[in-house]
Image (cartoon, rainbow, N blue to C red; front, side, top):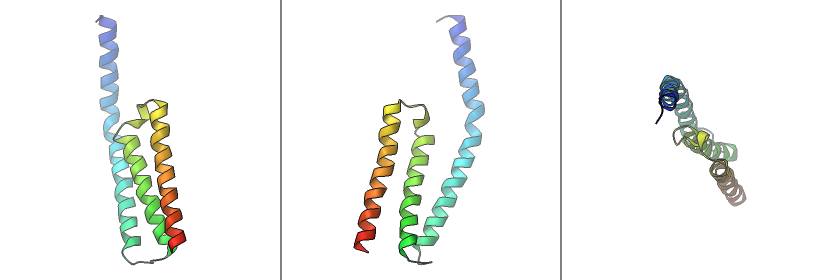
Length: 103
């Protein structure tokens, strides 16, 4: 390994360490707020079809956020990102269809 390659690797590690703290707090706050909202909606505070739809959508939005941030899909190959976000779109669509038809 050359000195230049080592310096580039160290610069990349330093940049990632500086960047790591801020988004975690933002993602954590968004996930916490989404959890509280879906809990409030699902706990009998307006048990309507809209509340059910919002709980399902909120749940899968949280899945997408966790996958993108904590599973580091931001830097994954495009095919994997496409498959994951396709799944995060297709499955709630099917669940919403079943939920609204059976209601």
